[in-house]
Length: 89
Image (cartoon, rainbow, N blue to C red; front, side):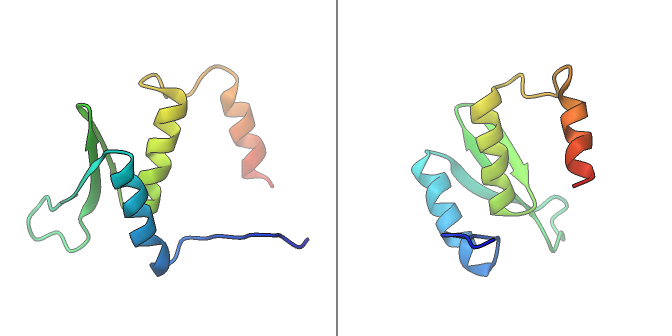
């Protein structure tokens, strides 16, 4: 199949992702716990909510999920079956 556009995570997606997070009003930091951690987590904070992820792209994905599902983002009845479907694609 030919696609009109395709995008995947890569070194050149980090800065644009940080720009999107900043434009959404998030304060971005790195969590270096413990201090000697060589691969600290990315942290986004806004309106007393904190999101943590290993990559900025994952961070944006968590925020998008939360924006769609809210504080009650957890798995809902019937959703696990959909997950099982995706496992076997």
